[in-house]
Length: 368
Ligand SMILES: Nc1ncnc2c1ncn2[C@@H]1O[C@H](COP(=O)(O)OP(=O)(O)OP(=O)(O)O)[C@@H](O)[C@H]1O
Ligand SMILES: [Mg+2]
Image (tube, rainbow, N blue to C red; front, side):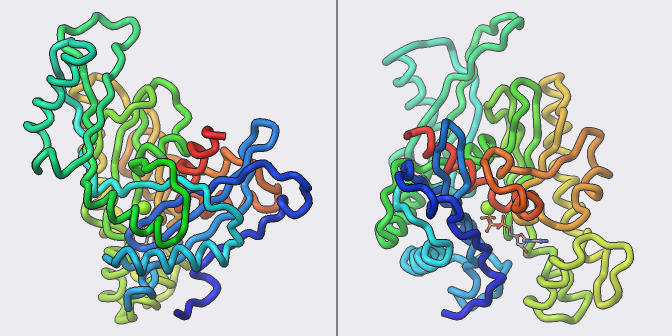
């Protein structure tokens, strides 16, 4: 397997070498469609300290390019993960792992108020109506959404139903097994991102996670997911459009996209329209979700947070600002961790890509 240095971004474990009795370290893992991301943290005086992180593209492990989404067997993904763990100097196998949103179903339902066993029975029955596959094929979980303070209690209660395909879990278990990791939880990626990037405690916030083949859009309110939506376009569609406009191959077009982002001045073969085509359709669709929410719930979304590898695109925040009346920001998940000051600029730049992995690692740290 060959890959050049820029496929992996590594920070050596600067701190651990100087400390004689290190506290246990933990690993957050995000297996995306186009690359695997990992973040190692440890707790020091109650603070999450960043020890190392890394990202390794899956494309080259499946005869595809960097930036392309691939469907690979568990064994191949485990090879990638092991390479990444080695190259990033990871020193622990104690980990948590994210489940891809596309393998899950989240839905909010309104049900009569019940408790205990009665509630469990009702949910098992109700779930069948909302889940398009046999209930035996999924792991089902649910949360009763607490009543809003200061609002009149409605007759029914709201329940968030969460279903995860058994197949997706088995796939992850095989990867974890092959990579000899000790994983204590599997968490749907949007919950991980929320922990890492949403600070607003009460007002609604929209997160847009631009991945390679898909974009995940969700609205978070009081720490809960009020809407979630998947768009079947992402960064690889941007690169594909640029290959057509520029006559470059995928790898060169990918590099051009990363170098220039959204630019008014970049020379040919860069082509701004082909770059903005996908982003604009993603933002237009996200805006529809946002408006539907605002109209139905009579609430205002106070912030849009861009995350995922697509969120690293230069000038994307400014471009997204044209689509939303509200404040648009870039995710900065590493802000939740302690790291050397000289690393800050780079951590801020690449942060959006690592939101899920940071969120998983932060949860794992809570176990210590
Ligand atoms: N600097 C950059 N500028 C523009 N796009 C970038 C940059 N870095 C990465 N990307 C794009 O981000 C995309 C990958 O994002 P990400 O790593 O979040 O996806 P993923 O997690 O593998 O996929 P998914 O979340 O859909 O499973 C690719 O299309 C890649 O081209
Ligand atoms: Mg992702």
